[in-house]
Amino acid sequence: SQKIEQNSEALNIQEGKTATLTCNYTNYSPAYLQWYRQDPGRGPVFLLLIRENEKEKRKERLKVTFDTTLKQSLFHITASQPADSATYLCALTDTGRRALTFGSGTRLQVQP
Amino acid sequence: DAGVIQSPRHEVTEMGQEVTLRCKPISGHNSLFWYRQTMMRGLELLIYFNNNVPIDDSGMPEDRFSAKMPNASFSTLKIQPSEPRDSAVYFCASSFVVAINLRGRSGRNTEAFFGQGTRLTVV
Image (tube, each protein chain N blue to C red):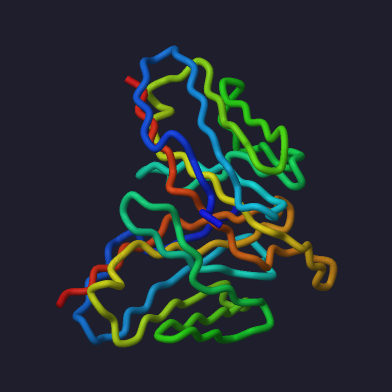
């Protein structure tokens, strides 16, 4: 069966450190992978999109990698700040469904 | 643009009552999605419209749920009759999509914009 797995345990790190979140998927062949941020009581907000032929994508303090062999994406936030505390979701397009399917998300808590 | 607009923000209703959730997508977007979010099941796709036509409703839980998109600027999700297990946050999202074929595999290469959600409580 198809699965998108993110670490359900919260990730707690100190301000200034690099946060690394993992997204693993099974039985998908995505052409694109997206990462979203969700704050309590709000809808998800798009952060980054990476194509299957891109190994890495950067945007300011954010970096995403996409390894289609390992079926894994890593999401990095460098020089993390308390304002980065949120839940981060990865999302794939299932070729058959043609709609975004989301992982369950990982909650990041950055301690000052 | 004001973004995706959902109403109401909160809805409390009694079991058995009909509930209608509303969504206004971003002008110019050609795809609309309804999602449901719970702690147990995360963010689940319920139904997806493209150019006002339902493309995939395989996520709709059962016949009690129905969705319509009468025009490009409005969609509704209706639950009749509602049950306590329908309690969740319901999100509407919209996107402008150009289907891309990469070696025969289509993909979605644009972001989805989400509304603020409707928190539904069925008592």
